Length: 334
Ligand code: AHG
Ligand code: MN
Ligand code: MN
Image (cartoon, rainbow, N blue to C red; front, side, top):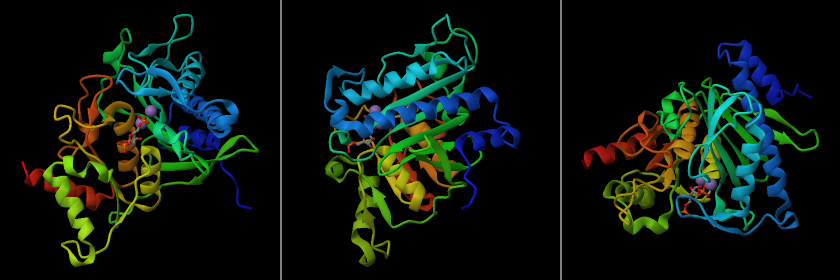
């Protein structure tokens, strides 16, 4: 049997190697991974653990919270607030940032997360996940504004997908590594390093039910895909839409593809559905680290300067040549 490399060993090697991963950041990642294991246990229990269904509350974005949204949020906060590695946390499920209580040591990092991504899939037993992003606190008293840093400032990003396997996917800026949870051992084991997204693809992911609301460049791109061999692209395309960003991005990291959640005409002043700080930024960092690309149709997502904590953004990410094509269509239409 080939030698198994645990997440801990991988991170220690990152600490010694060119990444020079700071020990406090290593600790932070280990704690997030531990929290994800705990969330995975709740997810797997399902109805037996009384974790399905709605919690009867709404988050700051007016979305109905599921029980698991709140459970996952609490697990991440409780796991991370006492270790001394963080200055604060921000989450999709909290109106404002959560400062580390003063009786605990204050660290130099900021953690942002979407505790449970793909909430609509919880009750129907389809893959869901946790997405996270790590920034450095720039000093001073921590506030919501401390988190408003461009995606290029991320020092780590990742997600954990709770699917047929529980897989943790991580970047500390030295490529993308995937770890599969060995349930018996209770540890994440490295199962793929230096993940690469193929530059070309024949697979797209978009919620087609919104087609009539899309902007023209998005319509043009999808129309051409649908025309298949006989059309401008000269090849047949396949479509997938899980409706959990983690699962759709995981497929793209595994076999390529393009994922889009574009701006649409229903709410013209809303830039998109997905959130910049804890969905689009971490996924864009991972995708770029795997050789893919990510834009909002016009600009690189990682370059965007956020204006508020729960800011939304239009997203086009995945196989580089397809993302470049969609972006070019948007620029031509300007
Ligand atoms: P969340 O469950 O964290 O609110 O995120 C759901 C997001 C994302 O995971 C997915 O790509 C998208 O919403 C699905 O949206 P539709 O239901 O509109 O397809
Ligand atoms: Mn989400
Ligand atoms: Mn969520």
